[in-house]
Length: 132
Image (tube, rainbow, N blue to C red; front, side, top):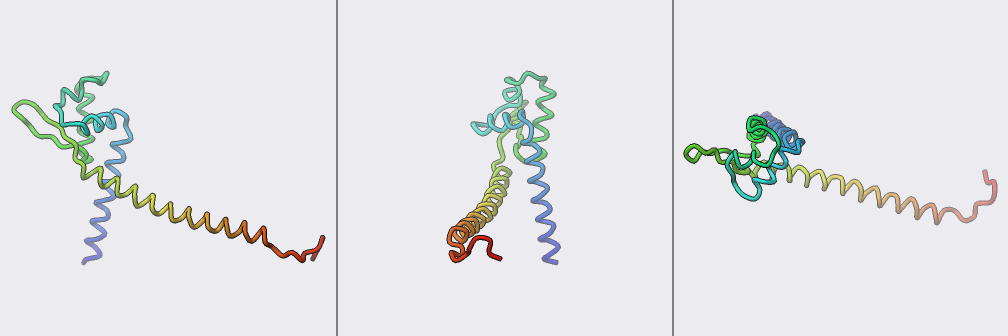
């Protein structure tokens, strides 16, 4: 039973990570995240700098909301958006784990290459031309 729950949690984390990375694949959505990293803002403030309709920006915002990267709350008529750093923390954790994995692999490869180079330089000295 514990194993099934662990698999469900891992699948859920993978789905969230996929959604966040897919959302970040678009430059407009990255710009929205960057803007919200400075402070929360109304939807109309977010849409203002983009050369597209409010409806088009709203679609980008919905993708970001679905990924869990931003949250919306209302103040009267205004819809206020803020960044949800937990989603970015999950991405940061994944990047850090991946970086650690590859650094270990590359360090091991570098060590192996140094050993091979050292062995090549200090190879058998009594070899004669054309030895068989």
